Length: 409
Length: 142
Image (cartoon, rainbow over all chains, first blue to last red; front, side, top):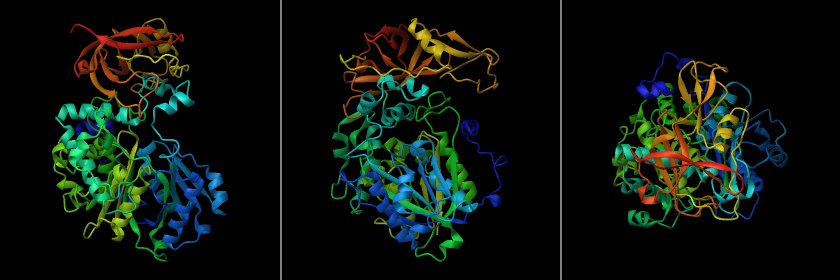
């Protein structure tokens, strides 16, 4: 993978044939559900999860007892047995917890799709529930002092004791190198959060609904981990979200227009541990995202120009913009120029991005809200609906084992 | 540069059988790197198998020159996301060593505005009051 990336030459001779892909056009997302996104839910994560899952089941037109599989990714604080006990799902025969943190934002859908395509389960529920605003905030430095006298793993041992305790820092190191090599400016970075905030003004469920932000506001916001300012970073969210995956055949009997999976991909390349991808020949680009994009285009038999709308996993602005490059929406090193002024990623632009406000302005639901918005764009029910959407892309996090899906009508 | 806040313990590294040699060397004020004698290449962080020749018995510890250049960095400026044991601001830097591998480290006697990509740096060691030994990088003549 790394060699293919360095050569910028995606090999097709060593990939399974598109015809043999059991997921393509056979599997769909048929139900979506969420709770309110708040700063203090006053409820347990298990409680929130039950509500979001019930909403997704109702949305699909299913019964709770139909759900026979569950899927999420690591760093989830829920107990799956307690979730099953609470939901009363009597026939669970598939469960999965994918590695890679936010990179698995779409890998969860990929694995759930593989399960239904191969008959491991009929209806898999992908769930996430967080009290990150009021409770445990993933990636906060002070947690480490409180809970951890010794680093959690050997690899964390080389970085955490240095005070290098947050994903914002890990990404800031490759982000700065990217900015350095391609002369990307802070002014350019600011357009990603500003446009996402504009989208959030039309989404009453977004954290930042009713709180607009200008580019000047962005420039004046405090530095958190240089090169990242406050508004480069994702929001804190309490809330839960869920979606349900089944076959296209079963979807015919359900309530909603299915969001059919035209392609799905995961990439776990060499020389990475969380976002510390520092041993690769170049750290100013992301093989994971490039590879996922190439595989999605190969399987869906399309290219970046065919994608109508994209939800790119953006825990920080640089993570969104660098994906535009690696997914081929602009040239490598041109991401800064591409987002300048914001028009290219606005609703009538070349590639409307994160149209519900993304992780920066809608919610940091670890990418579940991105998948849900990707589905809404297919259904035609987004608060910022792009016209005549045929193909809707969603990706997982940058700089970690990543993933992506292309949805179609 | 990193300044410790008194009374807050520093997290310790996770030492296992694969990286014991690395941390033992640090204790003795030496920076060593894993080296595959078959492939003649340095590897970092340490691992049980050479990812190139897949051998598990050709790896040894070789002392690094300790010299490198600052390849990239971040500056922690806000208590929101920083480690409470260090005074703000503090830098975390990625150093490309002469041996070709890169290591993550803190700085010693480098002012925040001097932390720049391309700065020539070399390793130094400090014994902390809690008994740990840590490595950091300071400026050097190019």
